[in-house]
Length: 344
Image (cartoon, rainbow, N blue to C red; front, side):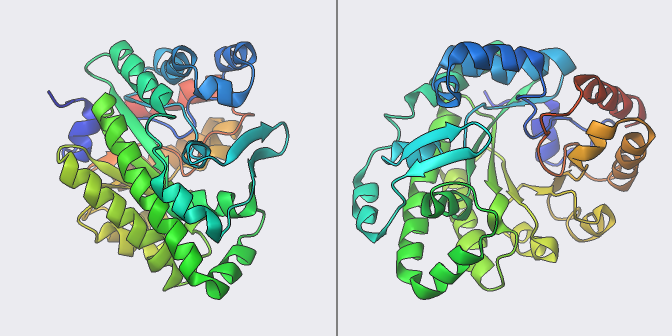
């Protein structure tokens, strides 16, 4: 039976008096209970692949803040890891992927099964689902192909993706083949998450920002549409949310896709523009600057009130315009949730 939580009802087009609430990176380093479990797990990857721990971490913010949806605790780089690229997380630096991907890897990647190596993730979904009430939804997710590819090609996080744009111009066939492989693997990965119990899925394209048109269409819009369309064809009742960060007015290109049910707006986008241009076509999600939750107080509440007023007459999911940062005081999150529930 499909989940009919407030979150799913909203994604299906219902306007809630008080919008459903969840937050990107709601499970993580700002919570003391997360830090405790993370220390017990050993490495970050050990935490991702321990389904008991990962499930517990997914549920922690639901218990603490009574949010309307949990998002699977995993990482967007688990697919390259399953494809055979060595993944480690270096304290203070972030992820490292070895060796850096080259054209000779494509055929190997194409043949490789990723579902077996990622079984622990699906077990996390099953355990989390069992721990959630019927009124709570579980969101599965994956990184969009371009964002995942940037890490695979750079061997880690980038300060400036210009070098990879240049590489695309110089080696379009290689980059397109890598994007195609990641698209196919991501479809299988998301369907497996849904079959394990995810009620909705979200695609994160953090590095869509800065891609010029028509490169954005080729590397971000097209692959995300292909993934979402395949997922919806296989599992028609499952809503798909897109979060391409920093695309500005090019958001229009995504929301015109039949495969897009929800669209996450980042903190740089004018929410009034989003209401006027996106809000009639898809369910808008997000928009609040995560740093406002660090600051707390009147600025946070005023910005939240603006979003509530702008989207009061259309289906809307309250969220951030990117994820919580580690410095976020948990009590500010609690205040924000209380404010939304009182003023929705």
